[in-house]
Amino acid sequence: MLALYARFRNEIKQVDAIFDLTPKGAMHRRIEALLVDLRVFKA
Image 1 (spheres, rainbow, N blue to C red):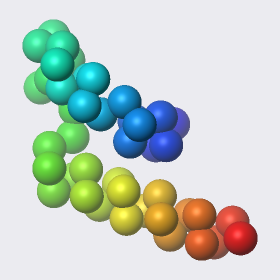
Image 2: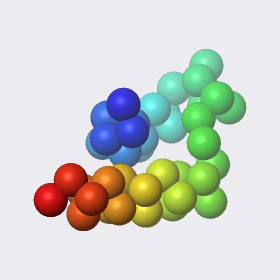
Image 3: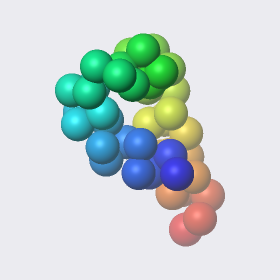
Image 4: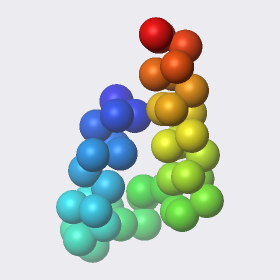
């Protein structure tokens, strides 16, 4: 789910109805850092 969010974030930001529901910049960076950690953990 997090990987899909990271891939579609720019498109999500274009939709006004859900823009307020998406994580803001700082939270987005934390999610991306978590994804990197998960990839390292998986390997």
